[in-house]
Length: 376
Image 1 (cartoon, helix red, strand yellow):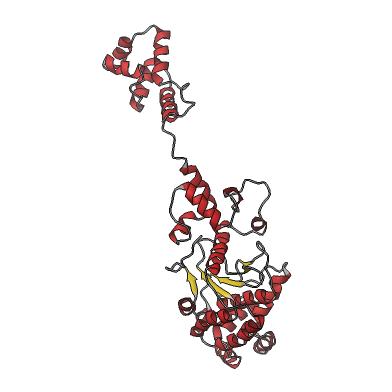
Image 2: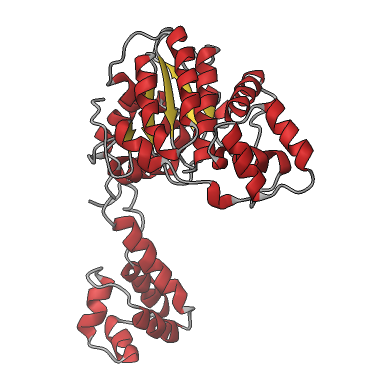
């Protein structure tokens, strides 16, 4: 149907008729000038035929007027009388402009549906009371806490997916003592990449929900520590850097958050964007604590300092491998710490082996071709 305000925009034939009257020309006169049948002119004047680019040029010559005048009149008329677009277009554009909706649908986080149902699904996905209270979609001038912390919409969607998956599974009651004990067992798993398969089971036994969720495109994120309530910790990881050194550093980092009871308030989750190659947010005391614990776990600081001091300035591969064997670490884990200390990101990269193939099969994993069934 035509737009409600289109009636005042006349067909170009209306203005051509006025031009004829002003010049004292008849329809037959204009047909003679243009070299077309009189019926053609009549249809244009009565709004039954549009102005083509060729006709616009011909009328321009006939009236000694810029042809664009007639072309613009036709364009304005066509636009004003075009059918109204599907109102869902604006809604879908608004949603896609903020969140990677198509990717969320592809990953099975929400279902393909009409715009109103999409908004309803996002409302449930983000645990919002109304569409306007969905983070980043609200019209309120005040920013949400996530915006203040620099969390992007895609990162936030990843976080909520971790939360939903965590809610869908059951684990024994959380025990800090059991988690401390698990750390001792983790220390025995650092010598070979395939041993990471034991991580999910040990965390489950300690009452920690361990969730792997593939990151969304262009959304850097390593992991998160969150709590479903005051006694139900969750560790989410993306394995965005599929390397043995990064996996153990991020895991130990998040475990320290759990042990320190960081991020227990809703909206206060400890979201770690990119721990690789950095010391994290040094303005955040909680992050410094978690980074220190992770670095110490991967390679004890006193032993690493001693090694670097003794071998300075030449850190030969055979020496690093031997040192790794002495402290019962895979060389890739030690090299990961040396890379940070020396700021040498090209150092012995061939030891930074992949581990995702070992940890995903025994984990609650969402992504990489598989979907955890979750009801919103």
